[in-house]
Image (spheres, rainbow, N blue to C red):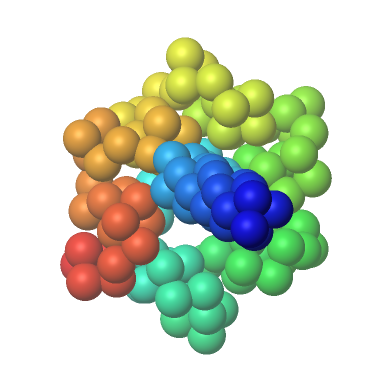
Length: 135
């Protein structure tokens, strides 16, 4: 009986820690989107994770994880995870995961996973993972 109780306790602790980990951290994909401000259609595509809604090559490249679709060198840098290709501070901030390099509020918001720093509605939509905010 003691072994069963121990098993149940350990299982509960493991499940709780997994749940807390998944809630408290932004997914890497969301954090990586902070290198630029997205338009409404790209926002919808990124939230739904469907590249058929994309209007930019950067959006397709991020969703497909293939740098050959990128329109900007910042996109290539983010996909390759190499800040030497970055042209902007937001790109460096995203790769280094340090908001102090950000030049926009959207960058800070996406790195910190806090919508209160957002300057645009697509930023809030990406953090909240709800495409109704993309408008």
